[in-house]
Image (cartoon, rainbow, N blue to C red; front, side, top):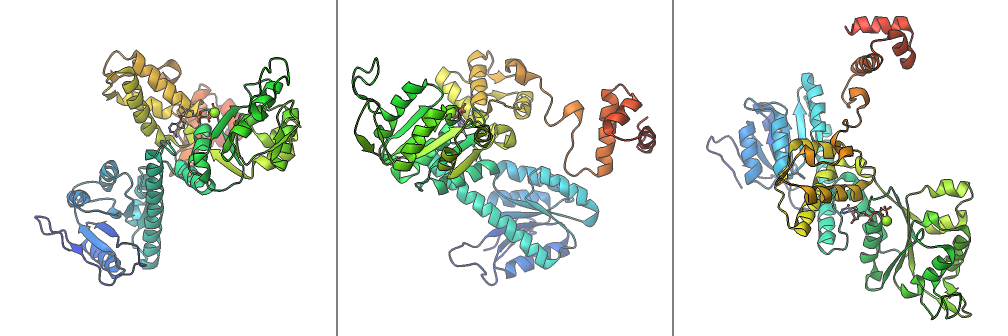
Length: 474
Ligand SMILES: Nc1ncnc2c1ncn2[C@@H]1O[C@H](COP(=O)(O)OP(=O)(O)OP(=O)(O)O)[C@@H](O)[C@H]1O
Ligand SMILES: [Mg+2]
């Protein structure tokens, strides 16, 4: 195989000795380095290990190859004669969001290399590159990317089958999906914990649809929605005349779900006496209908969910500890949206499409400031909130492009997070830079009052004055 562009600079070097474990296809790496010596030595080393290598000495060529070749990794210099490496990184991510890019920088440009990690570089190397370290990093980046790809395709596959209709490709969601996939086939009870609107019910449903119980019923019940007797009857059913109003026999969720899954939502709100009854049913795998005298055996998997801290409730005596241990054989934590902001654009796009279809509207897009505000908002109500906000915006929209005026109030005017007092602490700053920023922010928050600033920062006034001078802040 050989690739040549019109300048003749680009070529593919076919592997010399395949070094791949059987079953794993040869992987293609683009070595985009302007320095001839660097490029050639790295190319030779990779080819010797069995990788298919494409090379480029200019950003333009690298971008061309990106389109033409099916790549698994780009090794990219941070500067080219024609463009910055970070531009290649960005463009690569736009067209190939899953393609890992490993940046290479000279010793003097380490800070810039670190910056590229914020832009999504998978890793960076500093020249001169030690061969052993080089291969370790390349393998690590490739294997992480492979894992991500596998998960992504499983995820998309499950999503297509509506088994796990989740949206999200962040690392946190990948982990969640991986956990669901591993836990689903088991019989063990599962406790799902997460803030309101994070998707706990979706997780519960996915556990069911990905389990061998999928052909049997999934019975959900919200434990906070019923007064106690009614809850008992909902769960275990009643005989005719069991209580006033019980005019005929009724089967409960446990009986109806036999062979399937019972989803106990808001389990933290279950009254203590009901908890005792539930515990008995879990232990004995049988129960009686209310007012009945016959035991009924069932085989159900229990999946419970809560936004509460059950351990803390148990410590306060408001949740039975023995029941907690029965329920949380496996615990799944659903991350809040603010911890996986990368998923916001995907969710917005999906909910926008959905709302447009439902409301017969055509929204062509949104102003960049709208996207920015949506990205920065804290989303206390998580996915449910974002879904509602998008739907509301679509319903009320008067123009085909959503503008800042279409955003509901709390989202319209929030400062970016985490940034109290306009203070943004980013990884990659030196301690001195951080100190300077903190002093400046505190000073300006207190109208330049040095005594108060020193007090808040927990340093002496003299020290503060010295630092102000040192950093030239006066
Ligand atoms: N990852 C996701 N992808 C797509 N839709 C999602 C996702 N997570 C949640 N949703 C949607 O958001 C809404 C809330 O999800 P769900 O009811 O599962 O949350 P919850 O954690 O049970 O919330 P609550 O504690 O308020 O009951 C639903 O409409 C659900 O379909
Ligand atoms: Mg719920």
